[in-house]
Image 1: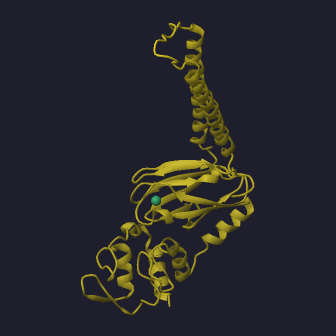
Image 2: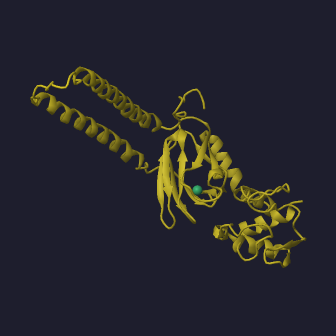
Image 3: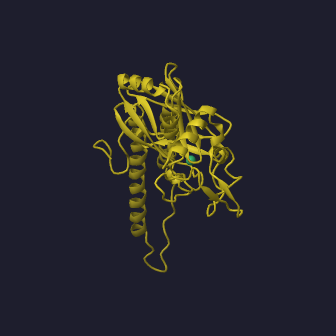
Length: 308
Ligand SMILES: [Cu+2]
C-alpha cells in the first residue's frame, strides 16, 4: 500500500477513485453518527424510564408531530441524497468517453487475456497509457469471472456469450493489482494480473515493440504465461504436470496406456485436454485454449518442445 492509501482503502489512482471514496466516507460517517445517536438515546431511555417499583404506572405518551416528522423526513432526505449522488457517479462511470482507447479483455479458467487494437495480446500484464481514458470490452470463455482493480475502484463481471464493459483513466504511472473477484474454480485465487500504467510515449513504443513478429518459440513463451499457473517448466508439479523435458518421452496416461509426446500429442492436449490425461492428474484442464489462432498454437507447441 502506498502513501495515498489508508488502512481500509488502497491508493486512489484513477479519476473516479476520489469520487467513489467521498461517497463511501459520507455513507460511513452518517451511519456512524446515527448509530452512536441511536445507541446513546436507547441507553439513556433504559435508565431514565426504568420501572422502579411493582405499583408504578408510566404516564401516557403523547405524540409529537415535530419529532415524528423529523425522523421520517431526515432519513428520507439522506437516502435520496445518497441515491442521487451514487447514481450520478454510477452513470458517469458507465459511460466511456467516445475517444477512449479500447482493450478487449477475456477471462478464462484461469487467466486474463488482453487484446489490443494493434493486434497485440498479453496475459499477465495490461499496459495502459496514463491520463487517457481506457475502455475495456470484456467477455468470458467459460464461467463467470469478475475484473477488479482496487486502486481504480473498478469492478465488473465477465459473462460468457455477452460483452460487458468498464472504463477508467489512470492518474499516475505504476503497477496495480488486478484480481478475479468472482469464484471461478480451482485456481481462482491465483487468477491475477497487473495493470501497468506508463506514459503515452512509453505506451506507443511498447505497442510497436510488441506488434513485431516474434519467432515461434518466443511467441509461445509469451503465450505460455496463461498456462504457467498450472504447468511448471522446472520439473515441479503444480495443478497439472510439469512440461519441461517431456518432448520425445513416453507419457503414462490415466487409462494405463502410454503415448509418445510429439507435436501432435501436445496440440491435442491443448485443444482437447480431456482425451488423454497424464497419469496422476485429474481431467480438469479447461478446453478454452482451443480458441487460439493456428499461429499461436504453433508457437506454444514450439515453446513446449524447446523446454529442457
Ligand atoms: Cu476468474
